[in-house]
Image (cartoon, rainbow, N blue to C red; front, side, top):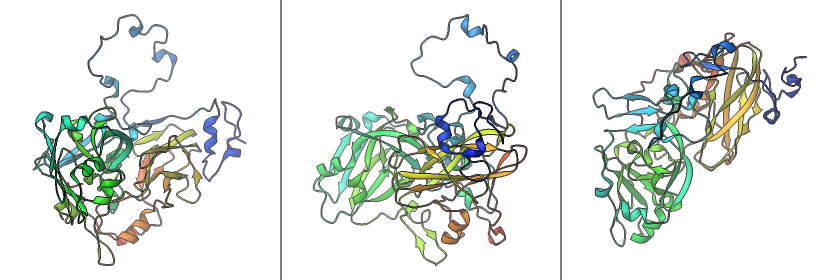
Length: 450
């Protein structure tokens, strides 16, 4: 029986599912030796002998270091940890940039790596000249300066924001071979701090017919989105800070609407106007871009909450396992309906499942990091994860999602992702073998992600 050389453990005795998935409590034991997972083209090569690195007298121990800086920057040796932008060739300000989820750890996304979605560029706003107008079906119209808002008592909430078009390449006939974060990375998680919207709505006074709130941004696209007034009064807020510092321009400076758990387009950046109405505005991003034809012939509209989703970030596409060994499977899970209650992982294509360890704290509508040890035997394997949230919703297989939603989808893709590891340790994205792709029609994923 195979033993783990670090501490004599019989790994076979700790299997919880087929193909080498081990009990998550093994992470509590010391001395486990994990194998190396590397990118295909790593920035720095791995040292193999003691002569490759000067452990006795590295140069940085014999000369003064750099002086103080006014704002910290990442190490020059981490220059591959960047957002991946794609923009419209005709309109350079229209496009997205993905968060490199496969290169990050923990649950908080650094401000400089938070995903972007812009329709007509990033406005350069002088906060002294920026105003927020609240009007419509209210008892009194009010205008707030940024300085006005900064005087209000604030609250903080850690929550994710996910673009409704995130992972939409999954609707295509062939699986995307982009790195995990570069087709699933239109999702990020931050601590947002600002003024509860309910406080300001109480000041203007809502009239009886108030049912909706139309939010408008100050960008050249003049983004408009409709939000039910009940959600606005529940937990929506006006964010001025992100991860402790003022929001950066690409994320909505100086003011952004945060609608926890609901699709990203509703979290209007560069917020300038809130109009209280009795009906939705039926803007472009609520009709042509967010109306999805279903197999029944009916259409889905106003699909607000993000449904439970998970993604294994390591090992994932473009990575290589350096031979049979003990590895850590890790990734992220999130749900717009509440907390993640469980994440299950399979290493045999879904035949058996093992429960992953969830990193504390497990927060409402926030990224949750999961981990599970895996003893890879060097044979081909298929890794997948599925999230279950506190409402009991289970992340679906791709076949289930396509059957339910049809082949006219573009948004709200949350199916399980499969990573195939071949005998050389190379990781690629695959669909389930049992899927009958011959009936699929190609879907053209264009440049309008929203």
